[in-house]
Image (cartoon, helix red, strand yellow):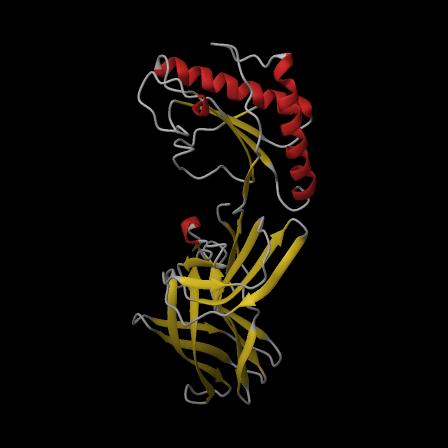
Length: 340
């Protein structure tokens, strides 16, 4: 599924401490949620407190607060542009009447302002046989976690080793433990604690069946052909009962014709027949989403010239999956229609 983005801000952390001033940080903030912040804790009474920083883009940041009592915590917003910047800071606590009477504290840090971590997991780079996948992120990734769920529940749920990387690098992850994978939950986290996860549904299961024979030009399922539908329904129902605890099970019905007759007429006939089979499964009790599509003379099981009567091409495909099947010779188009 396409990508869900969640953010987890690093907790405010005390990074250094002086005798009269100490500081902590909120170093990473999502755009629109404010700015990174520096917190100064006064451990004495001060006439004035200043924060003076040099930012890595050359900008100078000067912020101040007036009279501050011992124990008070001051908050300074770093109103920076989006991105990551390094700060070299000096905090001054003025305790006397002269400008030179102050306690100072020096510290350096990085701060980030930006959107959530964006990740991509190309489906063509998921290899279930070699038990590996590839992912990329728009920022450096510091941690990864993968959960694999099969028909009997999770069978792999572990942190993954993350190699040194730069934004946009391909990250290859591997797992152990054999089993049919219904769902993969991958979570990547950057050094700021921002994370993003993607739910991936790599499974699909084609139900073997005897094809329904329709009368010429008709999309009506006759009583004589009903036993074929009943047999297929038994197999569909078994899969639904076993898999639906962990994934959404959808039914995709694809219809095809041979090359006899007009291409446009064949296209319409294959779609009406696919819809008729879809409606029959829904009446049988299939509760999940049902999709259908006619491919007519496209996606032939056996390539033939025009006007060739080939029974193998007069067929339908019954596919169970959690997401639309990817484009292929068998499914040359992705315009599935949902049965209401």
